[in-house]
Length: 173
Image 1 (tube, rainbow, N blue to C red):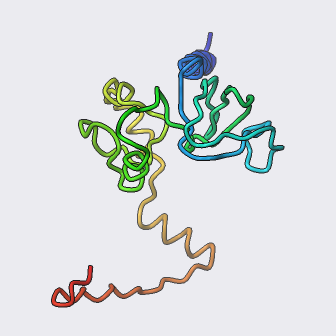
Image 2 (cartoon, one colour):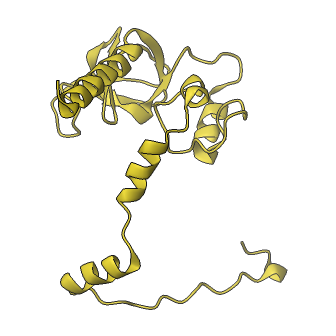
Image 3 (cartoon, rainbow, N blue to C red):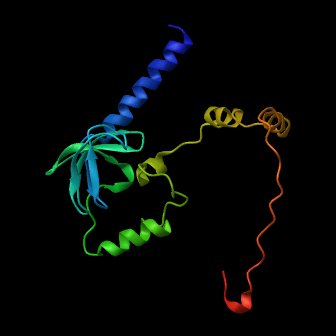
């Protein structure tokens, strides 16, 4: 078996494991949202969820969860669902404020804003991977490459002035 086939098999195994890891996980609708027939914004609407509805997360694809609820089954935007059991006793405002401030959770895991779909366990289990880091760095461009790209696209450099410093005496931020 050649290296490409081995890598493809490994990737397929990883994706299958990652997809099945969600199967049967409980979730709660954070807000009202439409259930779609497919994981696309313009797909046919097959039902709806209201805030607080409990769902069973069946699968994840891109930014979508396939869910099953008492109101039906379909695809819903990942940002509309909180993974895990519903929190009790603290009220809905805490969750909404936590989302808006980026400070939802226990405070033990930092820098997770924008990483929806990863739980605390996933982040704790993350390991340094030098090969993946080098791969990511290989996608960078040098300043000379960026200038060449801009010239080929007939892009023009523009100087953008910094904003003026806020006036501390007026209490502006």
